[in-house]
Length: 44
Image 1: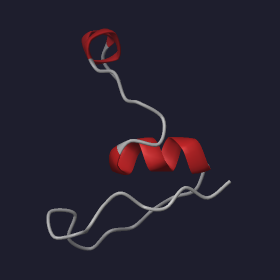
Image 2: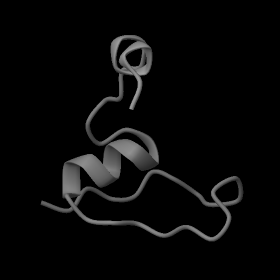
Image 3: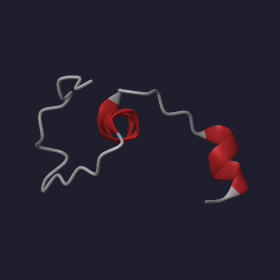
Image 4: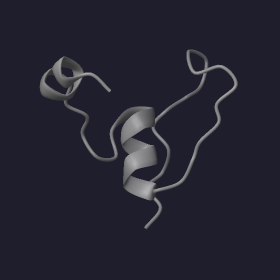
């Protein structure tokens, strides 16, 4: 990952697809992200 990307992009835990993956520490495969109805329910 580039240094610029690390410095400029902020992802909130639990928010959106990337946040869900980071919070749940599980991979997530979504066939059509544009058509998927996010957010997922929080699983703790």
